[in-house]
Amino acid sequence: MTDHHQSTRGKPRVALVTCTDLTDLDPDDRLVLAPLAARDVTVEAAVWDDPDVDWSSYDLVVLRSPWDYALRRDEFVTWAASVPALVNPADVVRWNTDKRYLAELSAAGVPTVPTSWVEPGESWQPPADTGEYVIKPAVSAGSQDTGRYDLADPEHRDLAVAHVRRLSTAGRTTMVQPYLSAVDTEGETALLYLAGPAGLRYSHAIRKGPMLTGPDHGPDGLYKAEEITARTARPDQLAVAERTLATVPGGTRQLLYARVDLIPGPDGDPILVELELTEPSLFLGYADGAPDRLATAITTHLALRA
View 1 (cartoon, rainbow, N blue to C red):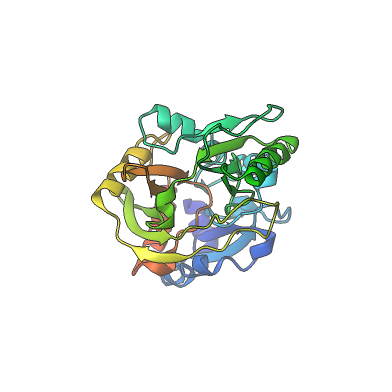
View 2 (cartoon, helix red, strand yellow):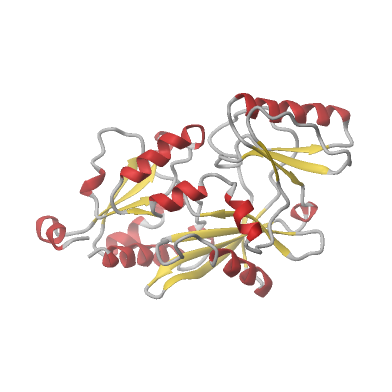
C-alpha cells in the first residue's frame, strides 16, 4: 500500500483471487472477510483470468482458489508475473506449481515421498514389485487426475499404464510414487503457517483422511472431497515442516502463507508429500483464531508495501 493509495482511496483494497467456478470464494476463505472488514480493509473476490480486472488497482492481490489453472499452467504463471503486489509472489508460483520442486527438496535433505518422473513421450512400465502406487501429474490441484493402483492386480497394472499414457499424450509430466499405507490409519497432516510481524509462523494443523480409493478415470469436478478434522501437530512433524520451509527459494519472509503436507513413512517418521505455496486450502474453520491470523498476515503484508 502506497501513500498515494491511502490518500486517494482511504481504505486499502485487497483482491482474493479465485476461479470462475467459485466466484463467491470458497466457504473457508469467506471466514477472513469479517476480520478484514474489522481492520478497515476493503476485500473483493476476483477471477484470475477475467480480462476486465485491473490488478494494479489493488494494494494486495492474494492467491486463494484459482483451482482451474492446472491445465493452463503457462498462462497462469504468465498472469502471475504480470500482477503487482501478488502474494505469494510470482517466482514462488512458478517454482511451486510444478511438483518437480520435490526433487530439489529431496536433494536438500528434506524427507520426501520417493518419486519417479515420466516425461511426455517417455514409455513407462509398472515396477516389477506388487505394491500399491500413486500416479498423478506434476502440475495439478485438488487431487485431480490422481489415482491409486494395486500392482498385484493385472487390471490395475493396465489402468496404471493407461493413466500415464493419458497424461503423456496431453503433454504432462507424470509422478509415480509408492502409496504410503499409513495414510489409511494416520491420515495426512497439513501444517498451516501464516505471516506475522516476525515472519512466517505456525498457525494450526488438520488431519486429512484417505482420499484415493482406486484408479483414476479422468476429470471429475474441480477437486475431490476431503474428510477434514482438527489435529495437533507433533514435534517431529513441526521439525520436518521447518526443515522444508528453510529450503524455499528466496526465503519465507516473502510468503503470506504456507502449507506443509506430511504422511508417516514406512518407519513411522513424517515425510513430505507436498509443500503448498500457491493456492492451498487453509482450513480456517478448524482452528480458533485462524481467520484472524490470516487477516493479520494480510495487514502485515500491506504494511510491508506501505
